[in-house]
Length: 147
Image 1 (spheres, rainbow, N blue to C red):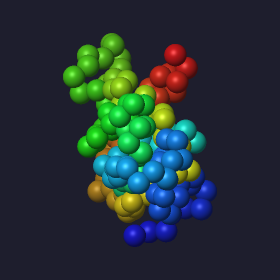
Image 2 (cartoon, rainbow, N blue to C red):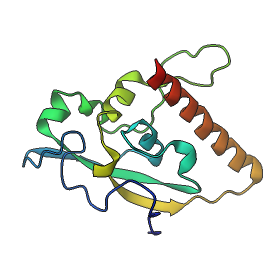
Image 3 (spheres, rainbow, N blue to C red):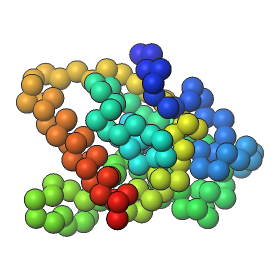
């Protein structure tokens, strides 16, 4: 695995609840969220700051935060996008409000990078497409937080 950049806010190992810092013995471990999710976390990197990396996060969540604070909305979550929502004219997609709200409860300084690998592109148009998606998600997150 490549070295995690020093300026990233994430920890090496998830040791406490990423939402409340509890070290309760009853917890779940989530390792399905991609690096773009950092843009929804407290103190996380916006999607455009991830650079040419892809990977996943791993975090612990205590039973109370999982069930009562709604973090369980992230159970096996793969995308911030609401695939069932209709978008407004000119907007390529919509965010899943429930999942974004759950991710905002997480503190990036208590979330670990589980997998990390360099993102390689076969062509400039492919790179441009990924960058445009990252920028669009980042803009949607910014408007989500402003509202």
